[in-house]
Length: 177
Length: 177
Image 1 (cartoon, one colour):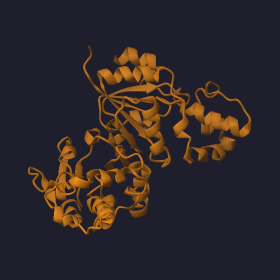
Image 2 (cartoon, each protein chain N blue to C red):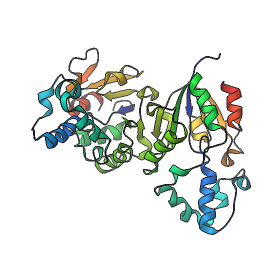
Image 3 (tube, rainbow over the protein chains, first blue to last red):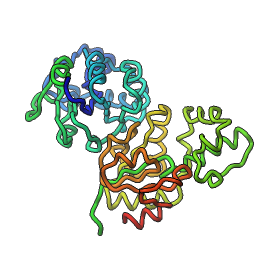
Image 4 (spheres, rainbow over the protein chains, first blue to last red):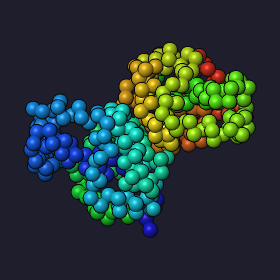
């Protein structure tokens, strides 16, 4: 059995398929049928949906969005096993979206009920947290972390180099279990 | 001018006079007129209000409580000056109370509008945060912090020894400005 570590796990685009949920909002608003694979290598806002940026993005601030995001494939099973072996903290950059705070708490309680409220962190700047391993999709978070980093593959980080990339929760299981 | 440090500042019973607000709830419910000075050296729940513990404590989970807590004397002026000189993070153990999450965000925005949302952390277990100085009223938070600690004087920590105690925000100003 491997040594128990403190894992810092991100929610949006790691545990939760937030990019696809944003596209679902967009599709519903503009009667399109985009899927995130079509934006691979892009930032949704900068490149893909620029024209209608404000119409869709302000919906992220409205009640309900973060409560209903889909769980990423295999996340529940793998996080459960990681939780049994390691000390798991869920750390989400959420304070930009005040309505998301309670919703992220409820979302976690619904899908990951084995994670105690003591192990949830809602913050803005992740340079405040310490731990052994960080799993995140954003360079800004990984580059200020002092421990091991795993870059979770996402549409907006395809050109990013210099980090160990994991493409799925199954790959995280092989790395950390 | 002193070196800029990362300060980790607690909300309840440090920036906010939460104990008195709990007593106000109690007073309103039971037609009493307790003030926190009467409970000096006690834990409100264990010693003082034991009999009516559940009646009052469950109100902390209801909407509105944390939104309306009074600001501690001199906190606004001193935190503003600390923010100008240091890197201030507000770190509150809030995830036990899901309704408090947005309310603490709003409370901070109302009373401390100069603190950016990036510098707010809502968590459960403060052993996750790192910084240079922690100001807190609970030993459980101070004892797992790696930097300098300041114990903010509170009714429930009167018998605690081994920490540098600060009795007011003016004293914190003298220490850190």
